[in-house]
Length: 144
Ligand code: ADP
Ligand code: MG
Image 1: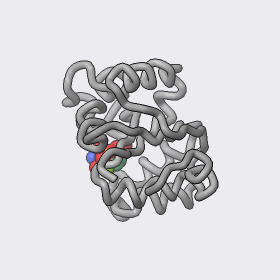
Image 2: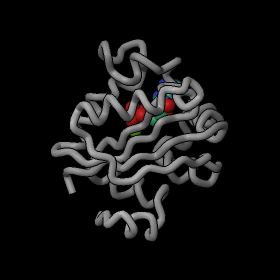
Image 3: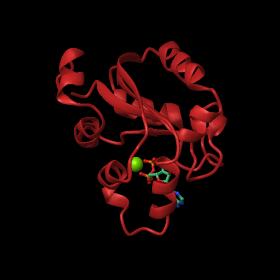
């Protein structure tokens, strides 16, 4: 399972019209797209997806941001996918994200940081089924 991960292009990046650019950069870096969908995150999904952050001061702001606009979810394949994608997107705060990373390029602030990437194999397994149905995964022959 170490070769699959999840990326979300968050609403601020979708509004900047950089979906294509982000996917191109991923493909140039040898990530393979296994599945892709657009969706608007509901409060119920946000509650589940970000359950480890419930009770933190930034949680209401995070949910408000994520539920107000279109997002793109992408299942990606590459060897060492989880770590590679985390390096590719840069650190949580765009101000300190490494030069050329997605968050440095397209993040607006620590909340509106352009993209999400799973941080462990365990979270890949937790997060993907929140966003993709069994049917969507099965149709794409994705085995978690
Ligand atoms: P990451 O997305 O890098 O894994 P976290 O899991 O810690 O970061 O946080 C989830 C998301 O919550 C971040 O991507 C960001 O949108 C938001 N967030 C995290 N920390 C803060 C903070 N201190 N202030 C505002 N928003 C935050
Ligand atoms: Mg995280």
